[in-house]
Length: 211
Length: 165
Image 1 (cartoon, rainbow over the protein chains, first blue to last red):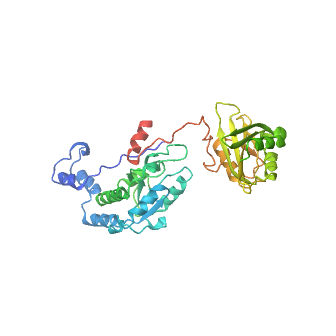
Image 2 (cartoon, helix red, strand yellow):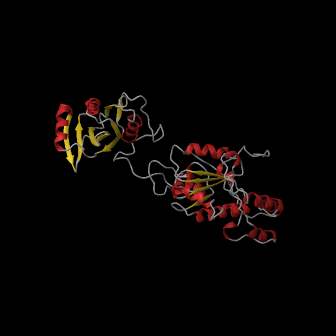
Image 3 (cartoon, rainbow over the protein chains, first blue to last red):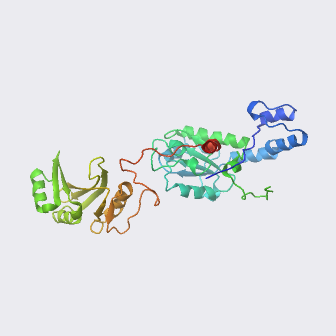
């Protein structure tokens, strides 16, 4: 199966955006091809989250994940404890575990994903509304884990995963750290190249000129 | 468990269906002819062993005949158990299904079929139970490769796909 995609646009974060705007140059790997004047402005506009509205929306989204806690196996036990009294994720605003994928925006895959379960999870992920993120919790769904055999499939094989939390099972603190890391990522860049990774064309809200 | 004498008497009553008896550490095992498994289990039921606890499969590779099916029978009244084994080869892995007499064998024989490839004749619905229906291969056989999927992370996916081309 050939998958051709265009390279993801470079993500220019706030730090090096200032460099660009002051007429300087980006360093090292972030250096794009030489752009001048009009093109440069457009390049920067498309990619840089400097508008206050964008930042506000990203901040709001990141502080109100509605997890679809999809507890499959042992990792689910640790996931419950992340929402328990000791490591309350409610203090960050994430206690509203929704049962329906339509109402959730963060799917936490906690546990082993068997071959038969994979299309079901994919269906749930497709039913979630954008913007949506996925956390792969534990060793089994990130990288097969201890059960590296005929029965399991890693989550990256059938859906795009934004964050992996290692551990078998990861301590609740580790899951919380992972969720907070995702929160930071979302504050900086909500899309995270999602459409490019997912080849998602045709599901945008506003009509896009696909040239 | 029937003791050694009891086991021999049992084997004698079953006649030519018994190929072998094994009595080891107070556990009694009968190795029977695969063609007569259903009548063997019926006779054992008449003797009081009314509970089929387990139907499971074994791969004895490289010994031939390679595939084994093991039935664990319990006697709930006398608190007794006996094991019935049979061996079939991969060329003709057909065993008569006992699910008509013992309803628990329905799902358990499906599992033995899925994992080892033993085909149970007369089973009402013989299809894979643990693996997806279109899966090829029988995972618990000894010559089935160990190991699973190669791991790609989403952020490495493009590099991995390019490396493949």
